[in-house]
Image (cartoon, rainbow, N blue to C red; front, side, top):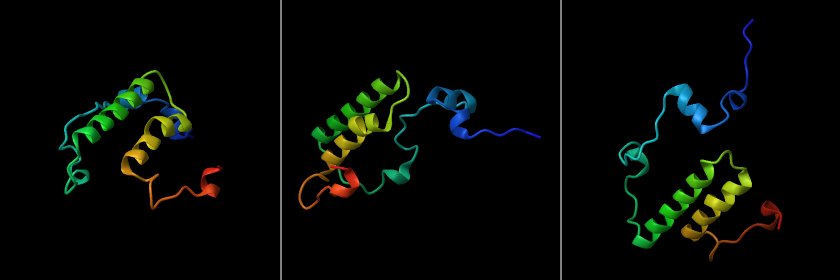
Length: 99
């Protein structure tokens, strides 16, 4: 009988995923155009901030796996700040965030 393993036990890194499925990253903006249609224009400052977040993530990610908390610090929190989701009228729920 064939033995099966969980995908998370079989593919453990982005490098492993790329090699197993012969994948290559793309910077082609038309690759997933459904995610880029009808969006508001970004300011130069917003573009610079997004580029910085992307660069920061990949610089850390290239050295190995990142814990969820690290990803939150590097990517999620800066994106939420950029989107204004820490500002009025939004509030963090004390129960959901263990504050």
